Image 1 (cartoon, rainbow, N blue to C red):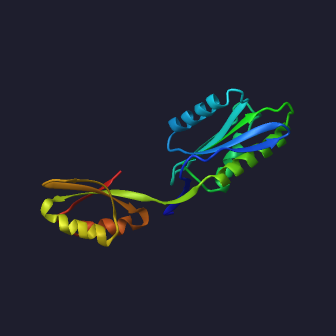
Image 2: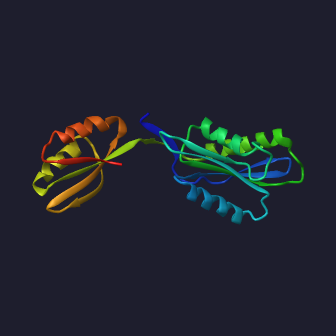
Image 3: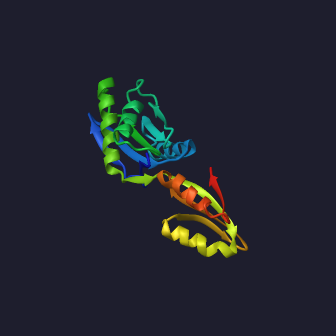
Length: 200
């Protein structure tokens, strides 16, 4: 697995109506739970009359983690249908939130599941989904006199420089697609004047 799917930016809200209840669907790119908290609190402020702000997120690339929250709706009637759509669209590092404003008519558990699922689906269809390549980083330390050799290697193998500190003692951090990592690491190691370390 060298690539994964995620969303590039927060999506514009979409509105789904079901028997006078309004469901507003949102997608946000996230990498930690603090970001999730911020987005959910932001939506609660934006919709002070909302009865529920239900959501689900999935994060991680090789080790996935997820959470689904019903925010007071009947058990598993909101968070899990939203999470199901995250799985259907095969996206990670993504939060989908649905804001519900009650319209006076109860939908029943089946109606809720269907409404939350549909809103999450529409929100994800409205988001910009991108493919990202799984990268691993390597630190290369070398004397200034080796600069030409290093830069030639970088250019030849189209390696991405993440950071560089070029003085008498130089250090650069390279980003390498995970599938190419072992091969490239070996190639750099073959130059004995370079000090190579994988960056965690």
